[in-house]
Length: 189
Image (cartoon, rainbow, N blue to C red; front, side):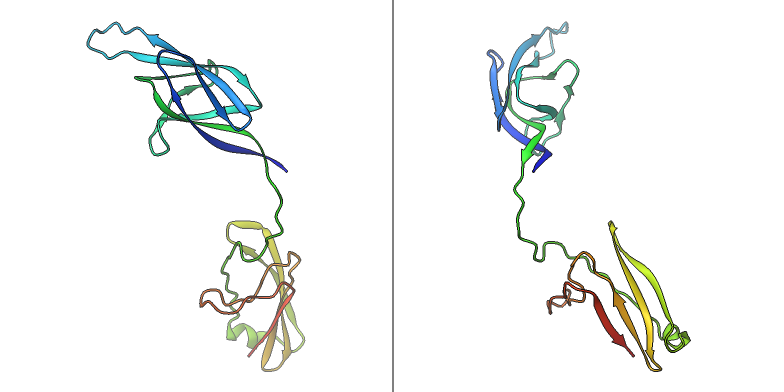
């Protein structure tokens, strides 16, 4: 499946000749231009023009190296300026083909605790229930409907519907057992 993805490409850009940059199936040429400084004490600088673009992409960032700050890039005029030639990292936004995998085991773990107070358990009458939703932090689209049912005078049953087949009930924090990918049920006293 195609996803718009940021991809980095490293290229040495010359100050005296055109430089060709190729990132995956996308390519472009960088043409240097000396910027004349009126101040004699100032070091010369360059405007680098992006030309001859081939492929479906957009330059979103130019930097000297992955750890350094950005070099300002003018998207309208397709150029960036710098005091010297050198190695630049170009970050482009382009379509990248991703393969779907069947690996689904344990790739995201979101600890969540459901607490039922003893006062609440005592207040429920036999065969009464309440229902609500568990909404996981930072995963608002994952809603799990749950029921707390008074099944005996001394206990309640917690039932969590699991339409997503996500593991529920594992003891991950202590390195214990994995949960089950089905509706979760547990009696509490």
